[in-house]
Structure formats: structure tokens, C-alpha cells
Image (cartoon, rainbow, N blue to C red):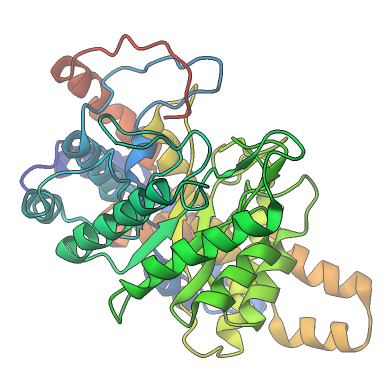
Amino acid sequence: MAELKITTNVIAAENDKRTAALKSDYDALGENLSRRGIDIETITRDVEKFFVAVPSWGVGTGGTRFARFPGQGEPRGIFDKLDDCAVIHQLTQATPTVSLHIPWDKADPKELLAKGDALGLGFDAMNSNTFSDAPGQAHSYKYGSLSHTNAATRTQAIEHNLECIEIGKAIGSKALTVWIGDGSNFPGQSHFTRVFERYLASMAEIYKALPEDWRLFSEHKMYEPAFYSTVVQDWGTNYLIANTLGPKAFCLVDLGHHAPNTNIEMIVARLIQFGKLGGFHFNDSKYGDDDLDAGAIEPYRLFLVFNELVDAEHRGIKDFRPAHMIDQSHNVTDPIESLISSANEIRRAYAQALLVDRTALDGFQQENDALMASETLKRAYRTDVEPILAEARRRAGGAIDPVATYRASGYRKQVAAERPASTSGGGGIV
């Protein structure tokens, strides 16, 4: 941990200001939960063991199709990104792994491992990129990648994914996430059936290269950058892909990749039921794939998703181990602060879902008592679990109030002095 730039003294000093209040709040919540037959210590221990991966690209300032406004102290490359990711985990004790995106994060695997070890970080799922062109590549992805009409372009995209697997093997990753922007912008531009056949054939080649203990996550998205048709446009198509490829293929659910008002928690339940839920990209949205901070718009929906996950755990679903990762674009906030907030909101939804009285809920569902079934969920959701989250962080060596501690540390000012200011004002989400 020698490379961490926030000293333990800063965390200790900030925690000292809040420890007495936390103890009072924690004891009061414990008494309240005890009257409901819930042991607060059991919930706290479960929360301590719940982790979510952070995206390497998330610590940079995002943007829109129209503009990007650089922030202070932006990371210059993957090693700066890892420094920022380490701060998030140091303060939250909830994000011990980082998900890399190739080719953005391409580096010597030995150096990546050494840096991760020095910061106390591991590596989560690898992410390939065939939705944009890398400098010097032979074939453009303007009209598609894994589903392109040109066999050479498809081969190039396949080989890129195979490279991601090799890098992942060297740094201890166990999964590959594949999202493509393939689709069409005009009716008649693409043959729906042939384009999907080409995609499946390409994915089959990638699937064959997976190590035995790896998983392949396919990710659906309703639109963007293809606005008329998207090759992997919804969870049904995603399920077809995972089912066609084999037992190591699963569906990844991004909370922003659905039409407004879609019942995402029911999609989660369906994928659990048929053994194809691979994991999540957590974020939030108001209008589309907004990539807002988790819980910023619809915290109740986030809770309802976790209600399905905890229900699956409660029922003892075999080999149930969904991957959890944040996937956000931070346009107007400090990315580190947003990722800290999101990690806490994700843990909050998990803690609230643990409070659901499953026996009572089962009974109300069986009796068709709609009101009381709904109230059972709401009672858990309305419970302020912040003392549990804060205590879980404190016990693990994190910050009782991580955002306040981050600001007190002066980390952003420090790295802004070390990293050259970015002058890019162009568009683009990353």
C-alpha cells in the first residue's frame, strides 16, 4: 500500500470526528432491527463482503456527442487510472477490483500486475472495444465489427477479443465482456438475419478461445450508435446469444440499456430463472443510456433489482455468482466522487434488500395480498441503512464519510499539480 496517496492519518482524523455519532446511530438502528427479528451484525458482515468493480475509464471525465469538458488532474493513462481507482477502494472498502478496457488500457501485463499489487487492487472482467477505431488498425468499424459484411474486418474484431483474453489471463481476470455498436441507421441498410448470423459465428470463435474457468458476457443495448437497428438490441436477443454459444456464455445487464419504463427487475428474474444472468453494469438513467451515477434517478429500481438478487441467494440458486461493475460517464462531477457515491448506493440497495422479510413476502404473494406484499418491500427500502454502510467501511479501514474524507485529503489538487491539464474539448463519451 506504499503507493497510496491518501494517508491513513487523514482517514483516521476524519473518522474521529464521526465515530461517536456513528456508534449512536448504529446502536439505535440495531435496536430497531432487533424488534423486527433482524440481527444488525449479520447484515453488516454481509455488506462488508459485497464488492463491486470500478471501470478504469470511469475515472476520466466523460462527455456527450456534442462536447467534453476536461476536469482537473485527469489520468494520463492506465497507471494514473489505477491510482485513482485505489483511492476509491481505500475510502469505500467496496471496490477491490478494476475492469480494464482494451486498447485504451493496453500495457505490459507484468507492469499492470505490479501496479495492482502495490495498490492492493485486482482485475475484474476485460472489456474489448470494436465500437471505435484504434490508431493504425487495418479495417474500420464504421459499418460494424463482429457482424461486418467484410470477412477481414470480422477477423480483425475477433483477433482483438482474443488479445483481450490473453491479457486478462496474464493479470488474473476471469471474464470477457463484449459490447458492440454494430447495427444500421437506415431501413434496408442491413439484412437483419444475415447480420445476426455473422455476429453469432464471430462470437463462436471468441467463445472457443475462453479458458475453462472463464465466462463470456454479451451486453445488449437498445440503440446508439446505431439508431435504426442494433444487432444485440434487447435481453431476448442477448439470451439467444448466451444460449447458442454455450454454458460459459451469459447475459450482462446494463441498467441504462433499456427503453424507458422497462421492468428491468423482471428481466433479471428471467435470466436468473434460466441460468443466464452474468452480471451488471450499474448506472442510472432518465431518458436513455445516460450513464448517470447509480441511484441518482431511480434508487427504488436499484433496490428492486437487488431484491431479485437476494431472493436468488435466499433460494439457493446453484452457481449463482453475478459479476457487479459500475459503468458510468461523469460529465459535471469529480469522477472519483461519483464512483465513491455509486459504490455506496449499490451497497445501500443490497443492504436494504437483505432486510426484506422473505417469509412474510412469500405469504402475501401466495394470498394475493398486493398491498401488503408491496408494503413489505417498502418497509425494507425505507429503512435508513447508512449506519450499516458506514460501520462496514470503518471496520475495514475505510472512511465513515468517504466523500468528505476525499475532499479533506486534497487528492484532486495534488494530482492536478502532477498531471498536465487536458485541453481536449471534443465530443465523445470517454
